[in-house]
Structure formats: C-alpha cells, structure tokens
Image (cartoon, rainbow, N blue to C red; front, side, top):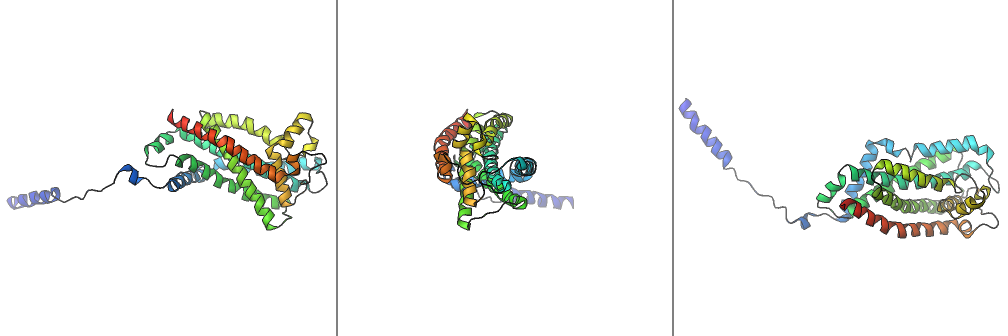
Length: 298
C-alpha cells in the first residue's frame, strides 16, 4: 500500500510544479499613470474621508460659527445698533459667513498639508505613478468641498435665529458663489502656511494670530463707522469687510448701504470682493505652489 502511494504523491507534486503561469504585462510607468483629474479626486476623497473619521477637525466649520452666532446675537446684540435700522441678527449673519469662510479656507488646507509633510504621506505620494499636481489639487478640492458644509450649516442656523433672504434666487446664488470664490482664494493662503511651517501645531498658532485680527477688525460684527482712526481705515479696505457687505447686499439684509463718505470698497462691495479674491489668487497661488514643491523635495 505504501509503495503504491509514493508515485501518486510525487506525480501530484510534479503537477503542481509544472502548472503553467501567465505573466501580467504592466507596461511602462508612463502608460500606467492615470489622468491628473482622477489622481486629484483620489487625494481629495482621502481628505474627505479623514474629515469623516476625525469629526473634531470640522469644529471650525460647525461648532465655532454657532458659538459666535449665539454669543453676539443673544449676549452682545442688544448693545449694537445697525446703521439705518433693522435686525442686528440679520446684520450679523453676513459677517459670520465671511469669518467662517476665512477660518475654514485657511486652517483646513494648512493643517492637512502640514500633517502630510510630517507623517510621511508626501514621500508615499512621490513614489506613486500619479500626476505631480494631484496632491496639491486634491487638498485644495477637498477643502473647497468642505467649505460648502459651513455654508449650509450657517444658513440653517441663521434661519433659526431670525435671518432671512429678502432678494430673489439669483442674488442669493450670487452670494453663495461669492463665498466659494473667496474660500478658494483663502485656500491658497492656507497652502502657503502649510508649506512654510514645520508642524500642524506651528500652523495653528501662526494662522490664528494672523487670521483672527483680520476677521475682527472688519464689519463682521460691528459697522466700520464705530471703529477709531487707523482701525477704521484698515477695516474699510479689509476684504473681509467687503465680503460681509456684499453678502448683506445680495441677501437684502440690514447694513448693506454704505454710510456717507464711505470709500470705494464699501460703495461697491461685490466688485471689490471679486477683485480682492482675484488679486489674492494671482499673488498667493504661484508663491504657494513654489513653496509647496520646495517643501516636499527638501
């Protein structure tokens, strides 16, 4: 019995050894590369998944705006009057929109890029057959999509506290489009910060010190006419003020009309915001891209 089984076992092993295999042709690396848009979407989807798995990173887009609305609407609102009359809560929402977009557009992409530079993700991306522009484009796209969240969140929150849109659908759509444009401009500031600073902690500290005064020395919470001297001049030409004024104009909210003797930036807030956004993109984007490329090759 033993003698009969030995040949069978040997034959079985021979059969396994001689099983034919078909090689897989991968082709040259250039042929395996997907399109730049597809690569960018993969990186963007990765960023969106991180936001879902780490919901605390969305605090600047959800908890913070609500906190400011409640604080100013119910605590300080009674002490602040709107020029020309009207509800302070409706005046406030335009400024909260502007502040949230500035914080979210800057902090989100800056923190994400700084984190990827420190956790080895950038080295992994460079080793993959993917478009060179996909990493930066994916981060920008993910944060632009993230900016839609606070817009929806603030719209609902505003309706709850008494804010209303008093214009037609086209003016309202233009207001939201202006928010997206300004968010895209602020993303490039965030890319520059995330590429220039060594750690996410450094980004958080520097960005907060730089962005916080920018959003408060403006017409976000109080009319610029209440500010003294140099602060008033700075606030009048601050793009955050023009964005707040543009939103109040397009939504038909109180405080949209500029005071007598106001500078051109407040008399034409929509146009000034578009120009300011274009200037920020034209100046910051090339510098940010160059600094980003330098940061991942050093």
